[in-house]
Image (cartoon, rainbow, N blue to C red):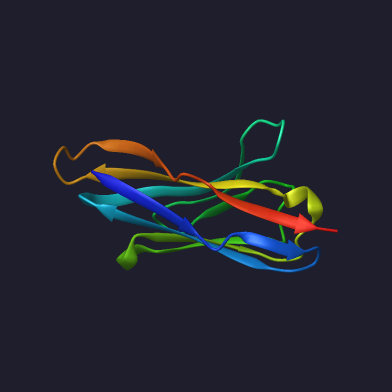
Length: 121
């Protein structure tokens, strides 16, 4: 079994910063892809940032230059540093991991439960 725990969300004023963390625990052999998604009220979930096992990153245009995704392979963690936050960044943020289990050596997709970020104007 694998368990993902997100932290770091909350309420912040426009222009402020937050750092989200996602920690994975369990029978993990390796973590290949990591990503952050968000879902605003009344909108579909959207991909905002990804990072590969090799450290290659990709960002949605809406957050490029403001958000930075990073990972700590030793701790099975992924982070999202969010700067210059805007009210339109308000959403529930989810981490997604593509990982290989020790038991099966097969790749699976896991999601965190989501963490609320509210940016006030």
